[in-house]
Amino acid sequence: MKLIIGNKAYSSWSLRGWLACKQSGLLFEEVVVPLYDAEWDRRREGDEFAPSSGKVPILWDGDAVVWDSLAIVEYLADKVGRARFWPEDEAARAMARSMAAEMHSSFSALRRKHTMNVRQVYPPVMPDADVRADLERIFELWAQARARFGHGGDFLFGEFGAADMMFAPVCTRIATYSLPTPRFAAAYVLAVLQHPFMQDWIAGAQEEEWVIEKFEQPAA
Ligand SMILES: N[C@@H](CCC(=O)N[C@@H](CS)C(=O)NCC(=O)O)C(=O)O
Image (tube, rainbow, N blue to C red; front, side):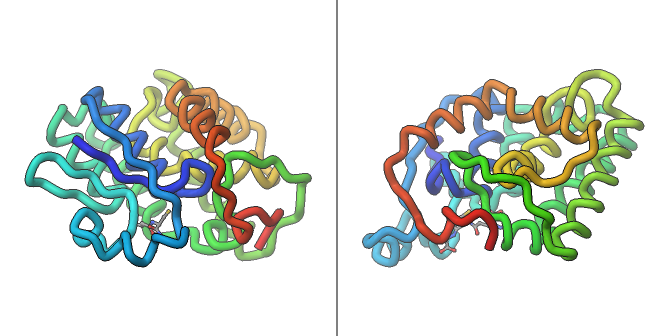
């Protein structure tokens, strides 16, 4: 398998797809392309990028191509077995899937105004009202998942799984922008950031030399 991703420093959707590949336990080649560099427009027109019209992540597996982070999660869950990605319990799985989907389709204020940058930690700021509303909803979801189904471990549904992969870039944003976080959520954020896959990703980001100025601001 070959996974094409953007900069580890900044590419939040790439992080999700990459976590899914790591969690699958399958061997994969990782190709990092610098987002928005001088070659970007030309590169995105190439055959490897065509299926997603240039967006990353893209997973190639022989003739199969999967773009979009959540589709990569589901493709790999089909391939290696659901248990590595989703809870066994039906009610827990229903909630985990709904949360992953909500993360994929929502929280645009948080995503737009606090872009991912795993190399920085900025001083605390009071986020805008729309960002606070996004965070409130996210914390409510996390609290419910932890209270109902989190007893088997430190993650949303106990063991590290697909829902955690989808929310991982929220955890990095909370750390980067020192966003106000209730204590239970801070413990969860720490568990995610300390996960070996996340440590591996962040170390990779530190080694990158590319800098995109628009993603290097304390808050947009
Ligand atoms: N919904 C897609 C979003 C993918 C996406 O927007 N990726 C960004 C990088 S994080 C990208 O490729 N941006 C470049 C562009 O849009 O030209 C997913 O879940 O994978």
